[in-house]
Image (cartoon, rainbow, N blue to C red; front, side, top):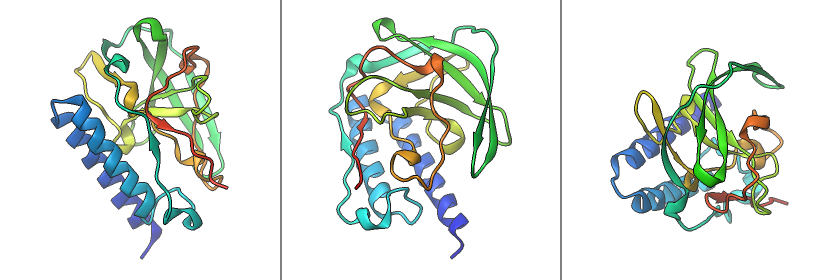
Length: 198
């Protein structure tokens, strides 16, 4: 089977997981289901970024859910900015800053729009927690289905759902990483934790 069909199935399953998250009223239950289904995808799916030699024994490490890290916030105006991220596999990936979200004492994050075919909201973050992937993590990547919900002027920003990008698992993948407006000074000790694969 052509690998592109595996990618298509991966994206369908990710979109289905997040649809289930948005439809589950209890964030704790939604997070548990998300963690369970993400673990299964990473360990068994043909399109997983986890190298084949590690799949059989791989289990992602997810921090326990903590409601203090969940926010439903308005997207505030921000100075327009364009980022063009060069990648080895997808060429230049363009992003336009469409706003900013403020997360109380945690800080604030830029909200980006993927300015190419398909489009989508993109919110990465980088934090100083010692068990966070050094390149950063993703929270929202709606073009790939990672969407926690919200209205036309706001977003659900639940840092319990931060996850490692594919490049955290293997150098075969190239990922856009957080810029200066998506770096937090506060350690985000929830979400998926970094596990080095030797």
